[in-house]
Image (cartoon, rainbow, N blue to C red):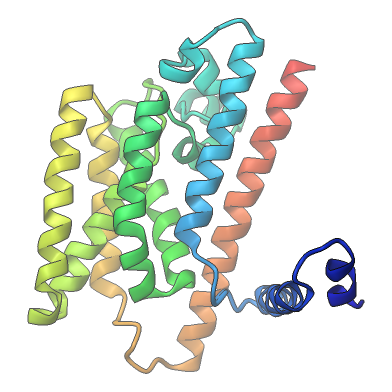
Length: 269
């Protein structure tokens, strides 16, 4: 297909868009082969975008349901659960497995969302640039799971929402990983310690899920112990394994969000 001619016809820079589409096609083919490198694509930005979109949809749902501005600033628990909040009885009794991942994309108000996205914007790119997208996807997904698992052991009957479990996972990972790099990683390690203290204090002030924070940090620290520096030459088997795990994580997150959206639509119907 002549993409350049199509975009030129609608008044856009056909050459630039042609190159973009060619890059996206290469990335898609690599993804289908289990190669989740996705050069030029920021996983951090994608995560922020998905969080913003889902929060917007939840807010619109609340407004249409007559909740008013409360949907924006302090959504009721019923709305949060409808949009993927974690509630272990629903997972264990009704098989709503997707909540183990979708809770990390559900937020209890614009302030909650804003704080978490600021943290992700600050720490995500630095870690992603070090790990590259495939291992970053694994880290973010894995720590979302370890965060909610510790929450289950700590308070199984408490609804939980928010990306902070994964964010503490990123911080816990960075502290351990960059400490292993010696003096070259000390500045970044200390920077992450500062974020951890700030986020923990903020969590105490707003009554956040510190069990989830701890679970995410433990999961991140565990990966920080076993992930070798990305720039160290790796065996091809290890690269293929990482790509395969990243692909599985991507499929799991997409399937969870898609299932949750379908559940919202059918529940409303």
